[in-house]
Length: 163
Image 1 (cartoon, rainbow, N blue to C red):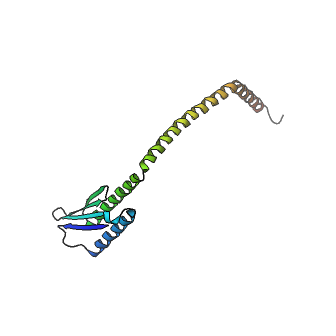
Image 2: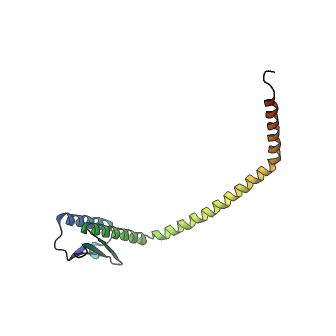
Image 3: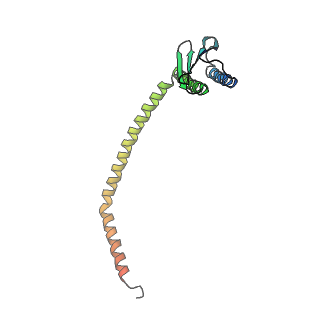
């Protein structure tokens, strides 16, 4: 992978920042290991604004078939760079999913799950209806049994247990 770093209104890059930049580039290379390294180009544009004390990081990843971009601003150069690389990582992952045709599979799964939920709702309605029919068929017997039990309880509770 070819990398170009452009600094605007930034005088020098500290050693920890350069290490962070190298780590992020290595992580990006691992994400892009299936791509031809000669055809991948990364442009890192670091811009500082002394007046607002804001730093902006522009990342442009030029793959052969697509250009992915990320832009983040923050009060700290480390923070803006980290956020920009994280946004670029998300873009790369999304693009790789697109190349593997994963969105097509996701859509089908969603449709299947929606159909299953409709079927399960109709089954739940059928179960409720069959339960109601069962209760209706034995309801009169249940009412008679309950009355008989209540009468016997009240009859035996009125009696004196001592005799």
